[in-house]
Amino acid sequence: MKIFTADQIYEADKFTIEKQQISSDVLMEKAATELFKWIHSRLQGAEVTIQLFCGIGNNGGDGIALARHLQEHGYAIQVHVVNYSDKRSKDFLLNLERLKDRKIWPEFINHDSGLPELSPNDIIVDAIFGIGLNRPPESWVGDLIKHINDSRAFVLAVDVPSGLPSDKAPWNKEHVVRASYVLSFQVPKLIFFLPETGIYQNQWELLDIGLDSEFLGKTATAYELIGKPEVLPMYRPRLKFSHKGTYGHAVIVGGSYGKIGAVQLASNACLTVGSGLVTAFVPECGYHSLQTAIPEIMVLTDEEDNTITKIDIPFKPSVVGIGMGMGTEEDTVKAFSALLKNIETPMVIDADGLNILAKHPKFMKDVPKQSVLTPHPKELERLIGEWEDDFDKLEKAKTFATKHDCILLIKGAHSITIYNTIGFVNTTGNPGMATAGSGDVLTGMITGLIAQGYSSLNAAVFGVYLHGLAGDMGVSHNGYEALKASGIIENIGKAYMELLRPPEIENNKEA
Ligand SMILES: NC(=O)C1=CN([C@@H]2O[C@H](COP(=O)(O)OP(=O)(O)OC[C@H]3O[C@@H](n4cnc5c(N)ncnc54)[C@H](OP(=O)(O)O)[C@@H]3O)[C@@H](O)[C@H]2O)[C@H](O)CC1
Ligand SMILES: [K+]
Image (cartoon, rainbow, N blue to C red; front, top):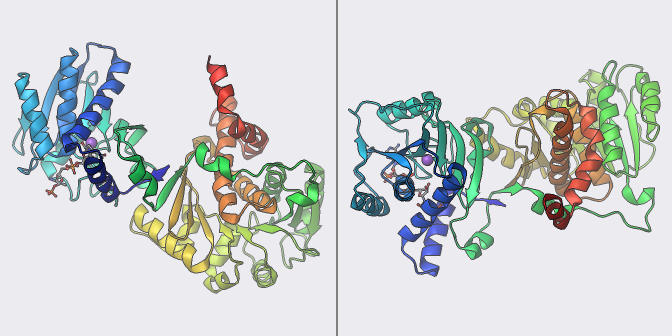
């Protein structure tokens, strides 16, 4: 599903209005009707006070129109107009008149008004600012937002949490509504997925307001949300007349004394995701434990006991996954650099592989094209330098990925795969996966997918989705805390089956 910018949403609005020959308030009415249906289906006329805070633009207009629907269905409402500007929008004014026609008189809040009384039992509708916010809210509006946040009431935000700009970090963290739930119109917004801005909502959901599907379909976007419909076409089915050679020979390089487990996890994940053959390359000290732990893999060892000093691979691998638990000893750096110079197949580079690249930027020119780099935030910072905010981070990541023709997978709650100028935002995974070795498993999985013939980009996007799904399946019977990296591997098979489960079976199960 595409992620549109605010400007693109305004264009979609305009296009829809022209093509469908409707007036703009039809879209606002559709938005308000969908908001009402969502609320009504859950509240079923409950005797709760709904406090609506409405700005003076179209986000406020949505709130005012919603108030009318709620009142018509007997809900107890209190409408507050947050009067932050005299430039009231046409459709806001239209809906204000409609409200007044029904003898509902909102309270107007100005810079010198007191703060309204709120109870934790109220439901608050936040329709102060939408995607039109373009400068810091004045301090009295910020104080009102803080008052809403302090109320401990359930806060339902219309379109986006008020105070959150769509293309930069908020000016003041206290002056952003912390929404219990966001009902957003038609398309997901990038702010829902970034660490700095995603914290302002607990949950979000999309409401279809009928924006033109032709426009949405043909418009190219810089970000795409990756769910089941997006990854399913990437899946490469196993062929009947195939053999282990069909699915490639992956090599996993890493480990040092006390950190052989990282290689074990990556190799096991690589094999479990479907690589035909897997060879692990480790310091001598890792030989016995690896051979014992995973009989299905082959093991090559360095001449040295405790660290990697010379990486000798006596065959042409399909792909090399490298870096986990490897350390950054001088000899290891030399061995890594020598491998980069000799290798032609794409690599998946993680952990100490990334740390070495960050310390020796000139090595980047030897990294094979179409390699996948999988940094967590700290490793990313070492690679691309500091950033101003999450939006700047993504721009810098795009510049880096384009310059080096690589795929940059930024790990996080919503991992984002960057390739050229596009970012693919993952939707699977959970906080239980923030655990030792989870990254090693991901590196192994992506390596195993490339070995089987997935393109590097598809391997990254598909791999991160499947990794998250396996984690989700793991916590479904174990809980967040008890999920271990090996538990993610154990659930890779179930994740594949979940991904491939036809929708009919889903329906039957529900019936
Ligand atoms: N296609 C859709 O998704 C639809 C969405 N709808 C809703 O419309 C809003 C966007 O409405 P808009 O009027 O463009 O913007 P806002 O309501 O967010 O803001 C109103 C105006 O406020 C001004 N502004 C911006 N920042 C500040 C500030 N800090 N202090 C004071 N005023 C501010 C700005 O105008 P200026 O000319 O003064 O710059 C804004 O325009 C969307 O989020 C949905 O809720 C439609 O209802 C249906 C279609
Ligand atoms: K809002």
